[in-house]
Image (cartoon, rainbow, N blue to C red; front, side):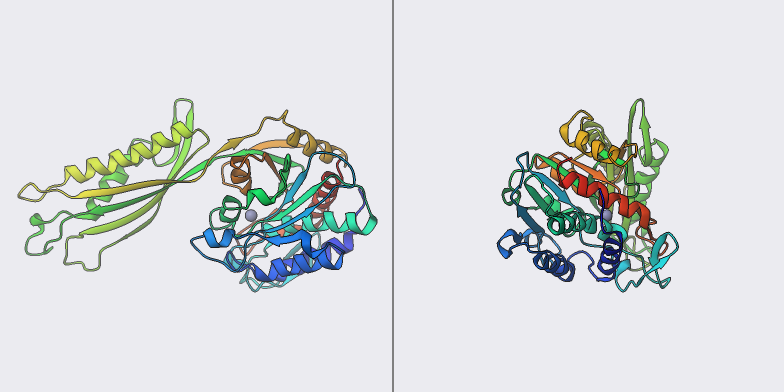
Amino acid sequence: MNIDEKAATQRVTRMMAIPGRSGEEQAIVDFIAGELRAAGVPDSAIQTDSANRKSHLGGQVGNLIVKLPGTVRGPRRLLMGHVDTVPLCVGCEPVRDGSVIRPKSRDTALGGDNRAGACVVLTAILEILKHGLPHPPLTLLWPVQEEVGLVGARHVAINRLGKPKLAFNWDGGLPWMLVMGATGDVNIEIEISGIASHAGAHPEDGVSAAAIASLAIADLTRSGWHGRIQKGRHTGTSNVGIINGGDATNVVMPKLRLRAEARSHKPNFRQKIVDQFRKAFENAARELKTASGEHGSIHFEATLKYESFRLDPKEAVAQVAAAAIESLGLTPQMRISNGGLDANWMTAHGIPTVTLGCGQAGIHTVDETLDVDSFLQACRIGLAIATGI
Ligand SMILES: [Zn+2]
C-alpha cells in the first residue's frame, strides 16, 4: 500500500499542534471534518453524536461519525482513533528531530496520543478518495473524551454506526502490535466518618477517620490486597489514589474521603478485591472506639468504569488486522493490555474491536515522541484495512 508519506507526516504534525484536551475537541473535530469536505465527502455523511451531553464533563462536541457506502460488497468496517489529548499537550509545537517528532519546548507533551491514531483513520480515507480506491462500506469514528475514562466510546450513538462487523482502533506504539483484550476497572469511593473531639483536651472522646483509613490500608497492604495482587492463579491490581480529610491539628479528624481503584481481567476476582477493601475498612471502623465505646462508620461505593474483554485470535477482526500487517511484510503480535481502551466499550457495545499501534512513545509526559516510520506503517495498515484487504 502506497501512501503520500509527506502529506501524512504534515497532516499529523498539524493535528498534534491543535489544542484539544478532553471536553475541548471542537477545533480538532472541525479540522478533520474540513479535510473530509475538501476531499469530497458530502455534508450528509458527516455527523457528531451527543456523547458529550452524557459526560460529567460536558464538553464542546460529541463523537465525530462518518458513514460511507461501499464501492465493493462486504461487511461494514469501522476505523477509529480518539481525538482528545491529556492537558499536558495543550500548547505543543511539534518539531521533527531525526526519526521522530517531538515537542519543541520541555513544557508540553506532544499529543501523538492520540492525534497519530486519529490521523491514521483520516489518512486512510483521504488516500481512498484521492485515488478512487475500491472499499467496503466504511464507518469512521473519532471519539472524544477517551483520556477521562473512555467517555466518548462509552456513550457513542451505536445506532448511527451502520452496524459494523469489524472494528479497528489506533492508539499505541508498535504498528504490528494487536491488543486483543484489556482489563476491567472498578472505581471505589469510601467516606469514613470518625468522631470529632478536642485533640488536646479529650482525644479519648473521638475516633480519628485518619486512623481508621490507616488501619484499613495497612491491613490490605500486609495481606497482599493493595498494589499488585497475586492470589493463587488469580491476578489483579489495586491502588488507593486520593485521600482528603481534616482541617485542623487540634481536632480528632471526623471525616475522610478516599478514592481507589481495582483492576482484574476476571470480573469475579475484581469483585473479590472490592470485597476485601470493604471488609478492611469496615473492620477498621469497628476496631477503634471512644472511651464510651462508640465507633465510626464507613460509606462504601464501587462503580464499574469499564468491563474487561478478550477477543478470540480466530475472530474475523483479528484475522483481518493480522493479514493487513502481514501484507506489509511485518509479523503481527498479539497482546492483552492492563489499561482500559475505547475498545473495551466498543466490544461491550457488541462491536468486536482490535487496537493497533501508531508510533506513540512516552505518552502523557514531556518526553513524548512520535516515531515517523511507525506512524507511516500504521497509515499503510489502516489503508489496507479500509480497502478491504
Ligand atoms: Zn490514547
